[in-house]
Length: 163
Ligand SMILES: NC(=O)c1ccc[n+]([C@@H]2O[C@H](COP(=O)([O-])OP(=O)(O)OC[C@H]3O[C@@H](n4cnc5c(N)ncnc54)[C@H](OP(=O)(O)O)[C@@H]3O)[C@@H](O)[C@H]2O)c1
Image (cartoon, rainbow, N blue to C red):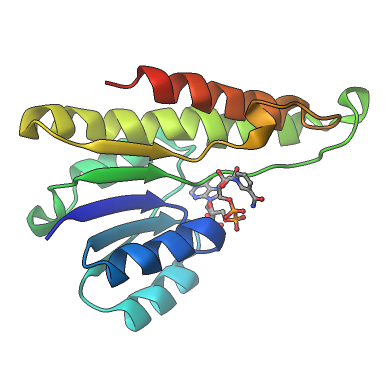
């Protein structure tokens, strides 16, 4: 049975992807920051779902959590870098610096931390796939998508260069 690791399963695309992978017969490691949502998903989705509560922006927590996965869950076949967000999509000069920092820390740095924590295992086992959630905003900029679009353009480039 194959295993997929999906960041951001407590809502949206990540939750939908977790449900779909389980339906297709995969085991799913799903992460997010909201323990109550993870507990509810664990209760509902059963033994082929394993929940991990961590913040992708916290470098030490990312590496420590993934390093300490139970032995039974240590073989990962596919990583879905889904956790991400768009904040404050107003004009550049009106932007809140905290919104920019949160998007950069989550969409860019968080994706890098999780990928780096898992890629060595992919290399060791001789296989592994990355699925990185980009956005049309990363290819076709629109007013207000300044830092969000840039963070997703980053995903396009990193996606093309992860080997
Ligand atoms: N929705 C769209 O129209 C759209 C379009 C193009 C691309 N995307 C991309 O698709 C991805 C998912 O979007 P969505 O609309 O499904 O978002 P969403 O419904 O807001 O869900 C985001 C998920 O990411 C997790 N997350 C956010 N920040 C996190 C952090 N710091 N650490 C750990 N987990 C974090 C959230 O979990 P917690 O809150 O529990 O931490 C949640 O599970 C994002 O990368 C987004 O940029 C979305």
